[in-house]
Length: 92
Length: 84
Image (tube, rainbow over all chains, first blue to last red; front, side, top):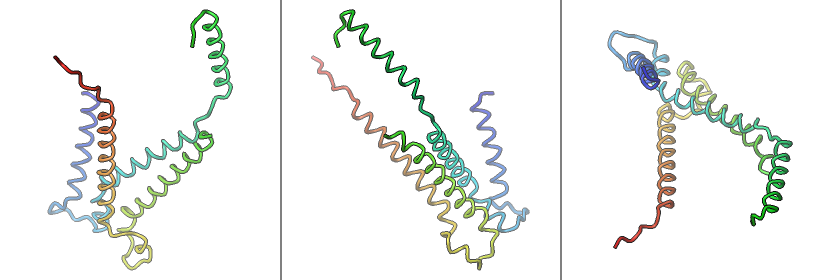
C-alpha cells in the first residue's frame, strides 16, 4: 500500500472513531463536558499542528548558525577565480 | 544586519505559537470541565468562536495563497507572439 493510502486509512479510522463518539448516537452516554470537549477536536488538532509547525520554523530560524570562516573562504575563492579569468582574457 | 534579527524573530514565533497553543487548549479542552460560575470564563469568548475563528483564518490563508499565485503567474506571462 502506498504512503498516501496509509495516511488516508489512518485518517479514516480516526475520523470514524471521532464521529462515532461525538455525533450523539443513541445508546451512548458520555458525561456532558467530555462531549463538549470532543466535538471541536479535529479543528483543535489542526490548530495544534499549525502551532507546532510555526514553533519549529521559529526555533530553526533562531538557531541557524552563520559560518564566518566558510563565508570568508568562499569570498577568497571567488576573488581568486575572478583574477584568474581576467588574466585569461574574459572581460566582466 | 538582518542576521541579528533572526534569533529575535525566531524566538518570538516560538513564544507566540506557545501562547496560542496554551490559550486554545484551555479554551477547547479544559474549560468544559470548569463550573460556569468560575471567574476564568470571562477571559474566553463563547465556544462557537473557537471553531469559527480558525476556519475563517484558514479560508483567509487559502485566499491569500491563491491571490499570490495568481499575481505571480500573471506577471510571468510571456508577451503573446503575433502569428501571420
